[in-house]
Length: 389
Image (spheres, rainbow, N blue to C red):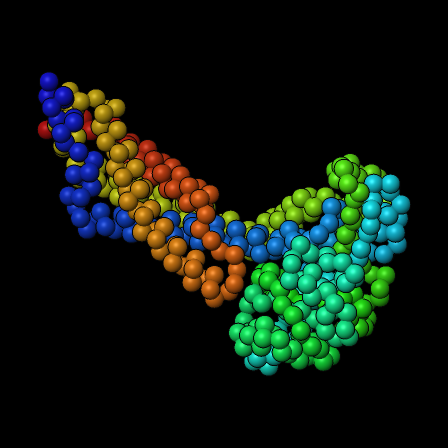
């Protein structure tokens, strides 16, 4: 009878949490900090992968050919253009096209400061990217030393972009050579470079005079309609020498992601940051719950003497853990959203709060608090009425 009266009417877990308001606020702050750390690290990791695969996702191709020594799009190494001609002999192949990519030094036309930028060259008879702005400006890049500029590049380019958008070309220096920027497109910055420039293959070879036309960075292979990309890639990998490898478009995107996620220090650091945030949260919540159980040990012992089972009392601790998880997550989520926007505006990196991130960190927070509650329960199991009274 007593159980039926007390259990539904006494929110025991909530009352115990708010009784010591100072400790309760400290607990929420600690969980919010742990959530903030996890959300930011997951966000940075996501931005790392998304920013460095934006170019690959925009490539207008069915298959991608790389040097076997290639690491990523900026460190693609070069291979002989002869391999593309050999690939063109496959019945399923409709056309092949070389893509040239290098990091170059250029002078910001607005600030006059030098920085690194990604330069991409291709045959302007057709666009190598699924970008309407690039397709519309193919005739421009046929002119000598004329390039297109990524309007979403990181840095102070507002005046430059406005001038080009108004139909007034901008001149500056790239690799010590005077160039003209006559058009714009939009891709965005990455962890590789602050931005990018697109031009014709002939302009590219003039800018990088040490690069030969036969030294291809990436090979773009277009298949005939109804051809199976996976089958064609397998055939080419078996027919071509081992100095090149052929990927489907999806495999190439996965290749780029894998490099940044598993083969770089920065990818490891972001992953480690998530783990550290989780462990910090476990420790904080454990300390709060353990202290709460220790302070209320006589009350728990009294409830045991009244006939309440260990399961009921342990359920109270778990309720406290889940309440802490949800209430602590809210400020962490709000602050993270603000920092996401701040970072995105400052860096032009694709840092967005998504449902996947929201749910992942919320689930991690609940698990974190439940683990802490499970550890703190060991103290509750020792609550023997005979010892306390």
